[in-house]
Image 1 (tube, rainbow, N blue to C red):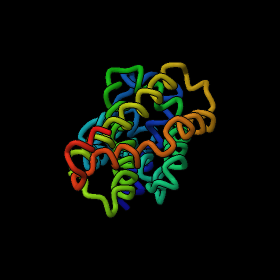
Image 2 (image 1 turned 180 degrees about the vertical axis):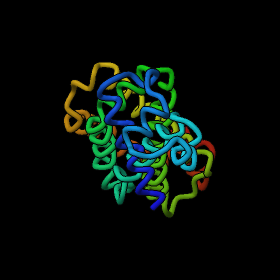
Image 3 (image 1 turned 30 degrees about the vertical axis):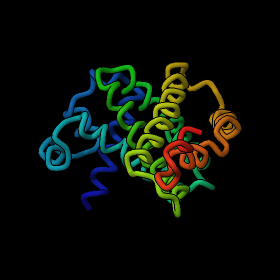
Length: 193
């Protein structure tokens, strides 16, 4: 029942965001729209921003379900972009409010989760230090999120499918190449090649 109530609160927040900006929405507004009392809201969330964060995490986990491999990272990224697009009023409203950082953190977390899985898969059988794998995933995270933030700032006008196709053309084989260069079982003189 807890998840049902949380989803209902999320739906109420998203419904209200179609009518007014986030900073004008109160917990009373959400509770009234949802048909619950304030205490029920506080049972599940500490404040509206906690609800926003939970909502972002839920959208992310649905978007990435089963799409965290080298062969499916494009689908995973496309699903993230589609989840953002499907929640356009929510994302734009939150992004343009005081909790802009929450949208950015959400994108960083979900994108890193996707990329970390891809890097780990591609590093199988290679002797690569964990911090080097994390560095590769982090660099790609900033690249992907930077492009997504530009897309969001531009009112999400570009086609997500085209964005992902162009990224695939630019990045094809680069994760493996970076891992190969980072291998610790190569002589030190060959690592920079």
